[in-house]
Image (cartoon, rainbow, N blue to C red; front, side, top):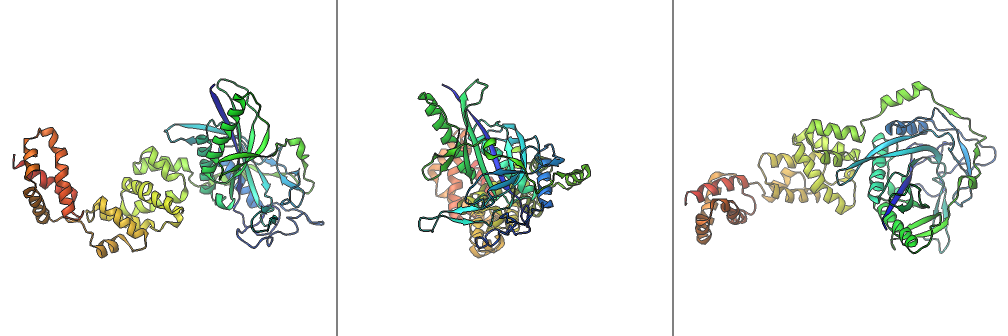
Length: 483
């Protein structure tokens, strides 16, 4: 049987406001547990919430970036449930009239294809606290610092058909919110979290299968793995004649499996009702227009500009603009060295490999944009070869200084002196009588490949520092003179 996976994502994005959604308490990450939860966050008697205007501004900016409808009138409801990390016993959120309505975004896949994913809506809500299960001698601790932090929950339509598409969509949302500056998007700190709704159905069927919800997945890699393993679990059950139970499940990364957490609630279970302490929030047309004018250049627009302005391929432009920091790094290097394609190759190649090995972001790169520009300039002016440049780059990454400092200290300057290279070429030819004889007897079409032996010996003699272009020209002239 041929199965089709159907996926919708609910993405929770913590907004980078200085204070919480309904109080003046700080949202700073890393403070001592329970040091940033005030009486309003805990809904103590006599307290009243006051909406944070900046959170609304950020939510509208997101909606505009998604080409979405903006809710000119939005209403807060109380969503009633009890968890240890939700001290109020309800969450203040939006349901019937959210701040952001329907929209869409285009995602790009590794095979070069693209597709549109529809946004159902995005709403503002407050975050809950956090349960801590480590180092408490078998007990759990509660940190309420996060309680009341403003979130937007971004709900997609079930438009994705593979784990790869879900990850591409999640990365696109991450890219948009970080470009806008409304969130740092740090998944390791919980600034961006994802719930994945997964179901399967036979290909060709219109009716959706029973879905399960995978809760609070906090990395791109885990999202992909969790969706794949959950889809396989559902297919196995259905092919064995069983049925899928609608439930919430957790993904165990260590065991690469999902396990049941609780039965899936529906809206009625939460007993939603309008929050009596908060009036509807009404936005004017002028307010929305002003925010639209403040939007920065977004990933898709930047990628198009990189293609037209720098002559990059669509693939390179897409890779460089997924993160705003990478795009800024690229432009800084380019402005210094004037070599867009070479810059793109180094950022997506050697630099990306270095950052992956060290598991750090480009903001923390040990090789600055100015240093990489200096290295590319030395390749450009033939001071070093591309091969030697990789040695210089590794030395720079280890803190040995600029490209010029490394080249000088290690004596890596490329040999471009015609006389010196001629001497090396002549010495290799004199020591390679058999290879020279074979070259002279070979068909003309085979000779270019046979030159590789001589080039290798010359590079070895020069310790990799001879100019390859000069070697090839002088070597060919001297070998052809022997024909």
